[in-house]
Length: 186
Image (cartoon, rainbow, N blue to C red; front, side, top):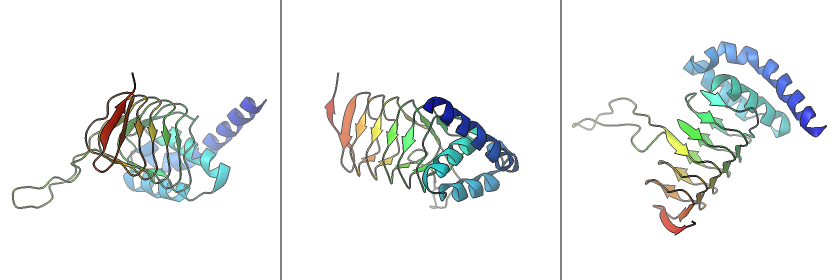
């Protein structure tokens, strides 16, 4: 019964979010996409979780309806993809990312679109944006307030406050600034 109730709520929220998705060009009209992402980030409680999930289902490159995006959290780029069972805490900012199934993201996490988003020329002037996709492997856990700039392998655990600037292999535990591998589970 509970499963069917959740499915019904998801269906209703997709219908409610459809007009916003149309106005955002299903993620292709950047300014509209961002405006609605920021607005929906501020909807509290369970209604917000369902509305954000439906909006991202309709606007991200790929997003399962079975997600839980916390209050204040949003996807900065519609090129992200989110698998089934992903959950975020509050106030997360996620860039161009590919997030695997059952990933848990604590509050205050930032997943950047790579390390070199704002390259400079020889004179030090910005030369535009250089976004790269960061992959978070299936079943990974990201601790509170960590910053992720590189891929995190499946089943990896990232400690709170860690700054990940080099890839983390599957099953590893990393913490610190810069993040260092402290254990690899086999």
